[in-house]
Image 1 (cartoon, protein in one colour):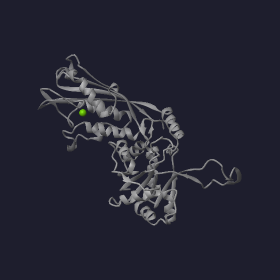
Image 2 (spheres, rainbow, N blue to C red):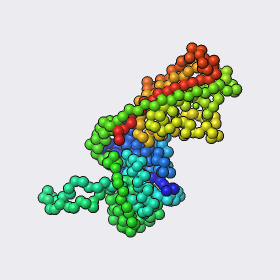
Image 3 (cartoon, rainbow, N blue to C red):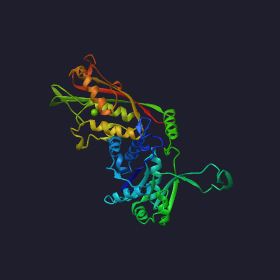
Image 4 (tube, rainbow, N blue to C red):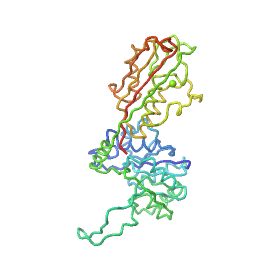
Length: 385
Ligand code: MG
C-alpha cells in the first residue's frame, strides 16, 4: 500500500512513572520510551512518514528525544487523546496519505510483523485493529461481590497501531459527536466503518506504570543476545593525488585511494561489520558502487544508514575494533583522531572504539604499497525476541 503515515500520539501528561516527566519521555533501557517507538516506526520500510503529536510544553524535550530520527515536525495535541489524534489527522491533509497507522507513543515495540499484518488487512478493510484474545476468565462484579462470569470467546484486548484508510478515519473524527471514544476504532465503528481484527503481539506492551518499565527492562535484559559481525575491504591507490580518508580523517598521502564513494576503507569495514552483526547484507547491497550518486560520497552517510538499521532492531553497539593495514602513509600518528571520529559517528564512548594500524612486513600487495586494507569487528547487544 502506498502512502502510509504513522501518527504517534504522545501528547499526554501522565507522569505516573516519570516523576516530573510525562511517561513517554522516561528512559527505558537507557533510551527515552518515545524514541524507541518513533525509531521503530520510522525504520519500517512500508511507512513513508512518521507524524508525532505532542504537548506544546514538551517541544524542547521532544526535539532532544527525536534528534536525528527521520520524523515530521511535531503537531500540537489537544486536551484529550481523541482531540490530539484529530489534530494530527488534520495536519496530514496536505500529505493526503492513503492510510494512517495511529499508534500510542507509550507502546515502544510495534514489531515489523505486527505492522505488516495491519497493513495487509487494510487492503480489504477500512480499518484494522491488532488485538490479543482475552485468555483470563472474566467476572463482572458489583463492588467486590461477583455478579456473573462473562463469556470471553469473542472478546479481544485492542492494541495499536490501528490502521485506517485516511479519508475514513478523518471523516469519523470530524463527524464525532463529542462523546468520548476510548480508541480510534470506536469512532470508526460509530461512523459505520467495517473493521477487522488481526493478531496483536505480546511484545507490543503499553508502558503505563513504573512496574511496566521495570518489567520491560528485565525482559529486554534477560533475553538480550550478543551479536558479532566482521568486515574486510581493500582499496587500491589510484592516479589522483592524496590525501586518503581513513575512518573519517584526511591523512596526507602522495596518492589517493580509488574506489567506491570517498574510498574510506576504514569506515567501509566498520559498516560491513555492523551490517554483518544483524544479518543485513553488506555495504555494496545498500549502496551499489554502480550508482553514480555514491561517487565521492562521504562514507559517514553509510555509517548513519547502518545505525538506522541497528536502531530499528533495538541493537546497541558494545564495541568496535578496526585494523588498518598498509606500509604508507603512516597512519599511527592519526589513530587518536580516527578513534575520536568513529566514536563521534557512532555516538559511542571512545573506550568502546579501537582503531589500530599494522603492516604486512613489506610482503604482498600491501607490502608493495599498492593499496590499503582494513578489517573490523563489531559486537552488538540485541533485545531478546
Ligand atoms: Mg570499500
